[in-house]
Image (cartoon, rainbow, N blue to C red; front, side):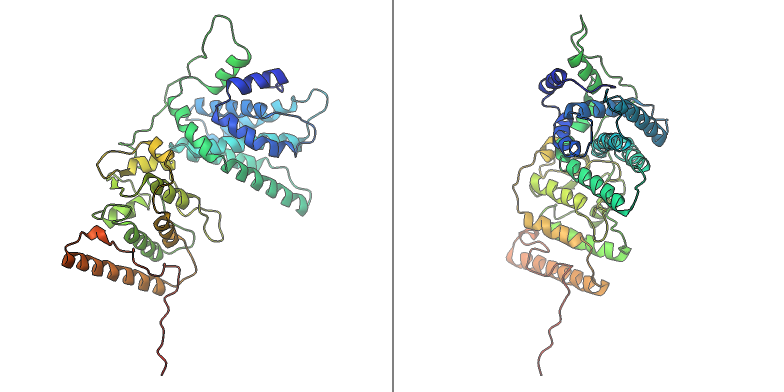
Length: 402
């Protein structure tokens, strides 16, 4: 795309593709960026067209091509195209960078939400690396700070739209038969005698299969020892068992779920769909202390894909991505927040953590014994449901006065 859309074409595109998620996000994000552009008066539809072009170029590229080289080449193409957007005034390098980086950030976010390694890791990382490589060298510290603030503002604006993109990206990459660029071209320049866009190439494309998908989450907070990781995982497991997950779930299964190990066993989920989505969404977005890394990482899959593949309902049936994606707000979120608290690193000694774990395990044994005496099921009062300190609260020993 070498020219800006005129008002008529932009309006036509907006009407005909009004429900497209990527276009919706461009409408939300671009006004913030347009304020920083000096001369070019681009519309959200212009950004959408370039983002659609970039998405399709990356999807259709040969997987054997080096990702960094591929993205660098596409950056050069985009940078040169943007230079032709203004017929009367040259487009400054700073404006060209702002426009190109917006498009590349958008597409990086799109791919980060896909389940397949090539998109959510390889291409996403390549896009972000090239954006950083091409950042104009600042004249002074003030300009450097401005650049960092602009990139942070852009990132946050796009991240706020991640849910909208998540509902669209996997279906588009895995199932859509026509490409965005072909659809855009069909709207703007409908050829005679053709009633639909051409079919996209299907060669080499993979689809998500929950029965063969083995990826899990990785819980390895920066600077945390293996001992502390194990203690916090055991605390979280104790809190969840019998409440959010089946009481007969083995700890090794839960540990595998949270350590990135390939997992064939599915865990029975007792909580609501909303609790399932909320818990792992919080773990995947909550930032660690003094770092921007989330508490858990997704090795190759998106959250919905991992949850669909790793959990089943109490009746033995599988979850669908839509059931998790469109979960409501039912269920007690206090237990969800407490599990997240158990897994959140805070300054606390290993001795205090071990004391907390021992206390919780003792409570579990007492509750199990009480259940047997009273003829109640173990699930009546599982470990962690009684009032006790969280693992980030120091255990205080009160000394009696003499």
